[in-house]
Length: 290
Image (cartoon, rainbow, N blue to C red):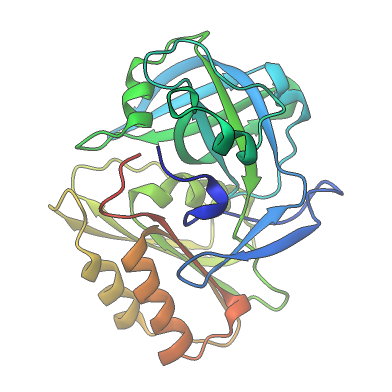
């Protein structure tokens, strides 16, 4: 089980809506990217409603009911920590009052397991949330759970948190990442104004199937590779080669930790892009399974 969320690199993000959700604090991830978190994150106990493949290598898990009536979206790339029963347990060992102090106080065998995931869709009227789980080799504890999940399986979601926050004056967005960024990029494109322009830069395994929502002013560039881990240099080299105009540019990215750190250093230190215009966050490490 990874350390609690406040102790590890965070993953996705955004701003807006709900009065309490818009009160945010900036929580720097280890690579220096701000991760914006509502002041009132909470644990939402729920259950699986449906599981379906949506194109290699993803499964879509739909959660419904329970505490999700109280969930408030905070932006298109919002992410949550999926909390699951510990090994050997069919039921959750936590409830809606769960917090990370409770986690530390629990016997190790009782602690929930899990991983971070993007909220791909939130349907408040139906009290439903979708997350897209990337299946990978070797599998982690959360992806093994997803493959075996059936309707009625208990789970909880802790969050939401966010990093996507284009500042005023943004004229073009560069959205980049690997497979782990696809759910957030899809949600961002759905929320993007029709007159906003964007370039989507992806480094993906050649077998990965993508189905991004169309946008009239978004250009998608895909870099294929054969490595199961994804060569860190591919995305970094592509960003360096593009040399986008800095004025009015906002960059959001998600992917392998060292790759995102290298891209952020390039944009901030070599290109001189101001910090508010760079939200590039490490979603995973090569030594970390999820």
